[in-house]
Image 1 (cartoon, helix red, strand yellow):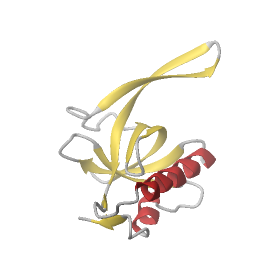
Image 2 (cartoon, one colour):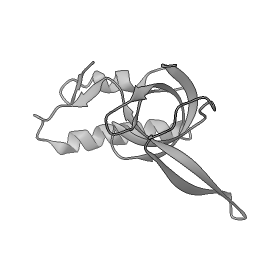
Image 3 (cartoon, helix red, strand yellow):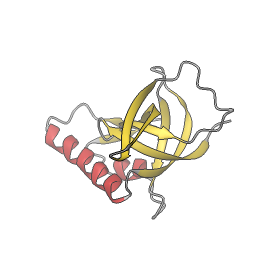
Image 4 (cartoon, one colour):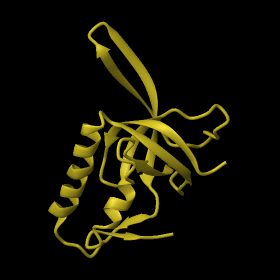
Length: 132
């Protein structure tokens, strides 16, 4: 079943590693026990929609705890948020499974350039490190 690639709309950015994403999951996808929340949005003033988002965490990357300058972490979150804004929050999401907190482990891919946001963050080795 995993990995699976689907279209996603990023609803909330908690940090460079944690997101709420509305995913176009197939009906056969196992959602039992998955961390989900409801969100409401408007496309225009007369039309209100409600959707479900999945709590997601980037796969294969950890934040280094030895860095004392948190402004650098916030700057990497801003960099990701700016990229998402340029994409109108739409990304390709490769889902790899679940973590122990029932979040989806994902890779975010810029659907225009094909660049993995996970890979870009891993290149910031003074802030993040790779894990398996």
